[in-house]
Image (cartoon, rainbow, N blue to C red; front, side):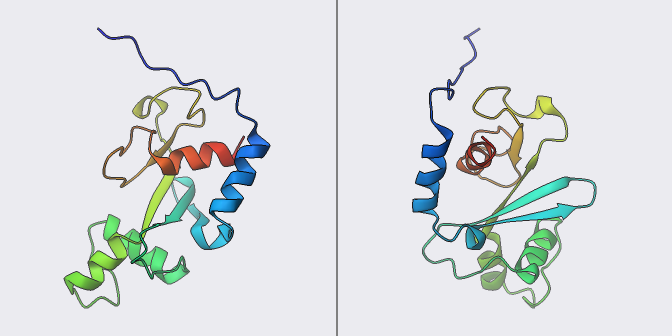
Length: 138
């Protein structure tokens, strides 16, 4: 069996990382929103960086995204695929894992964040959205 991978992030100066994030995301409030979710605690919504994304993080868009995650047709889309796809591609949902065993236990993700929908790293705790949350909490 291969040895588990370990990431050493302790040599990184958190202040420098936060400054770099501020350069990449100068308007952080437009890119990340924290929402209290019943039964999930704090949940974070990240706006997609896709240049074609025109959806802003508003209460309405987050509500539509939650409906979509729950398998419902989002309100205001009239069931049209183009409108639904626009909402689906507009943001990502990150939360603390309900059980710490669901995500990789590693210093790169000590808070055990998981990305709910990220297509490549869903629930592994290794996508860019979970790493941003870890860096923000350093």
